[in-house]
Image (cartoon, rainbow, N blue to C red; front, side, top):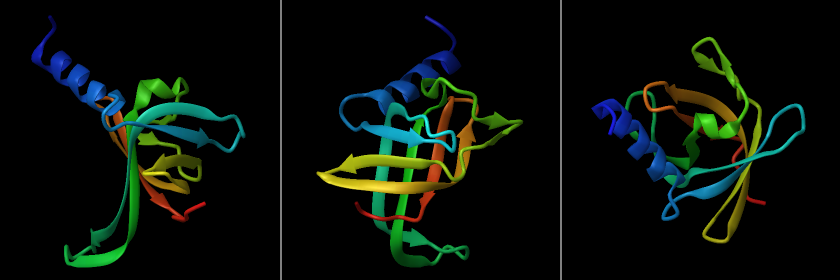
Length: 121
């Protein structure tokens, strides 16, 4: 058994990779090679604007374990995945989106990406 931090990392990553909520995420970087990992995908219609007021509009994001990609996506502390295509299916609906911005959690080894160009296939 490791430290409390080791346990937290293992638990967080197991939730994202677990069978209950994870879905296959198919990434296509600018190189054209496809990378498939499990992760979380969310699509919803409510969000908040910069003043924290409720705003209705399509919003989608994904989360996945960084080491599962098998490629280095870091440029310093930033994640260089903007512009990658990601495809996933939720409730029998297929989505194909472009990654807008990414927020890495370096402590837990998880990356969350906001998706832009939201569109159903």
